[in-house]
Image 1 (spheres, rainbow, N blue to C red):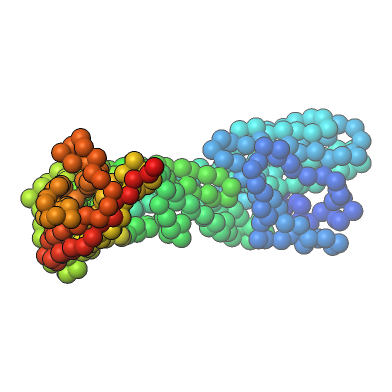
Image 2: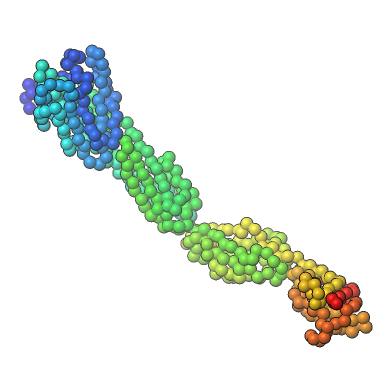
Length: 412
């Protein structure tokens, strides 16, 4: 390209700066209906009666389009489109022309565009606009995943956009404006303040991590699925309390990612002694004999990782009790139809009924049973006074011995 041509192009690129203010159209502009966002340039062009900042139209992914129009102008207008060439520097020779009331440029890639508009009565003016085809890209890697932490490594690959001051040709970088948003499914908190968040106590289930990057209203999304290496211990107990001997079913099927189960049934009540059970199953059954409270702990193992869970409520085995009534009414009051003792957590038990002559009329050793007021299983005992002797030993080694009169009433 000859030196005269270069001089012409440089003069052409600055026409908008030096044209008289009365030639500047008040309603002329370059528009772009398909952009997702528009920002203005840092540079400012000063005219006699106004100052102008040019627009930067941002498109996501695909090239955009620009339309130049000059409302109110009479007759056909001529449009000459040129693109900014940093090698000149400045706007080069027209690469597209058009006639009519407006002109549209399609497939506009990232860069600077200038349109010269000429028409009747010596109309000759310039408009400028910049186009940024924004294509952010993201990726996720795993920097560390062990029993304690999961370090995610997110990367955001963005296109740095430069535009140029049309007077000084100085390159100006569009400021970085990146927003990050992390999410996890199933949900766990993930900090969005960093591309490289750290997750303490990684979840014991397969989890999808998604990073969404927004850069000047254009978004890029990437998701990875990370398998667990940790475990989470948890279990239920049924029943949680009762009299000795108390048989309890433990259920740890709600534990997550467990490969091995280790139970600590706390064999000594009300102490810190915690002995590991030989039962490695997730649903063991254990019997407590000694009254008291027991703290039960489960350890689950997955590879090199483990987790402990102590049930928040203790297993309660009731202390022994023995209470003996002194009256009952067989065949009368349904709530007092048999002579029953209240026995709790008894290891052994014996009850004997005697008549007034000291002869034994009934005996039983099951504390949940009683005397129904019959002798020999068929003959109703006569109303009156009898005598009982009740003895027993609780599972807590407490001894009991009760003797006394028993009043048997029968309805008329």
